[in-house]
Length: 87
Image 1: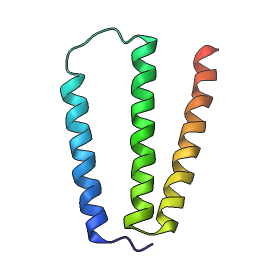
Image 2 (image 1 turned 120 degrees about the vertical axis):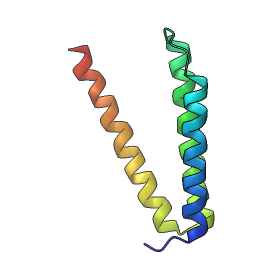
Image 3 (image 1 turned 120 degrees about the horizontal axis):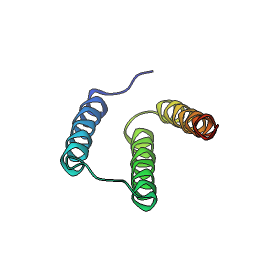
Image 4 (image 1 turned 90 degrees about the vertical axis):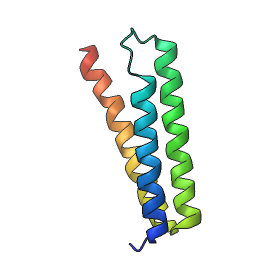
């Protein structure tokens, strides 16, 4: 897989910014409501889809396909964990 340095730099800068924003917004401890958790889940999924689309445009289609395959696999495995928590 050959992804350009531009894509790598944008990825690292973007992830650093997202982590910084997450730490800044979530620095005050509070009880997370179901609504808030749902909103944050949607936000992170939309950002992941935008990242995958960016990979398709700036990188290769193969890199984007591999990203989405891994993302969908991880999401399905995280839903599996919910069944364990319910038990």
